[in-house]
Length: 201
Image (cartoon, rainbow, N blue to C red; front, top):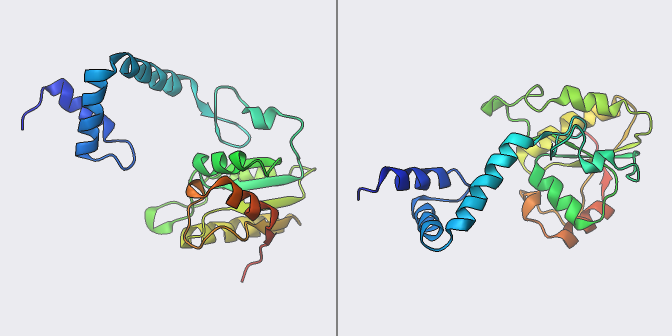
């Protein structure tokens, strides 16, 4: 079927979203054009503003509009604890659990040599700088329970233990092979409270 070029372009643009295939993108496009043109305009403006204004926090690497995100700028957070997570979605999940009041570092990925993702791609040099902060006592590994997540946890463990820091790992409640962003807040809260020391095998 031949669509108008503009309509086809809108469908292709919507397909960049995760889990959105051809038919879902087509339904979204039809909905926006038929029933919610003002919503479509607002969505376009919000995306444009986000792309223009949002960058990474210079300390934890989460998306923010200033040099520091609100969490890194909050002097009430516990400087003794640093939680290392893979993605912004994982960071959001842990924050929504309400169980953690320390600081964060976002890897924005996980070690995967087959995909060409090594320490440089994860900016682990920036993490090493954070590990030198004088108040820091414990590094909490909140990487996913996948092969790549475990390899990443092992690498970070070596860095942290090399500086004499305690290293713990999320414990009960996080299933093997599970992704943090899909785990409910109460389960994450339990996992944070029940964390254990992580040692290299």
